[in-house]
Length: 162
Image (cartoon, rainbow, N blue to C red; front, side, top):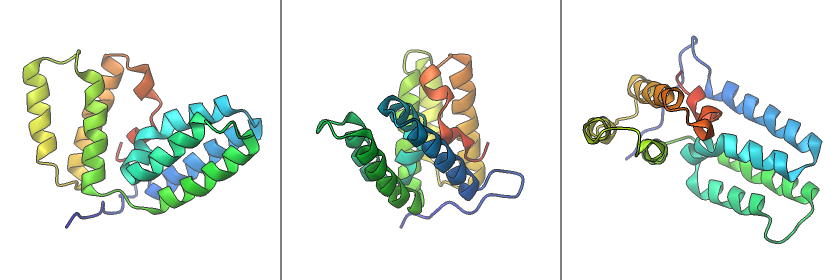
């Protein structure tokens, strides 16, 4: 059975703090009543949401795509309801592992084969305790800055344990 991440220590942001930050950014986007703001918000939170629930992330992505041409107010309301359910789910070892694999794929052309293999061995042994996940996220965050991965720079997922 997969274990859940233990609560963070006082010197880190708690998951509740991160959620509060996400809600505040959502309401800022909603106040603009502009779907481009929702797209930006969704993009910045993609990996945090993936760690909580890939299924809910997919639903949110479909809403943002707005294939039904709904009005922005409806989309924001639907998005909020799904996002609330998503954030009520705790990330699991499996969902963190999935998220980390997705992030690592952004570095496929930047790392040597040896670097990738070494990092993948570390990931494969991930038990998702606070220290291991912190080390992995710090490495990914450092690579993000080193290789100027602008898509990843604003990801709220990096607020976990860092």
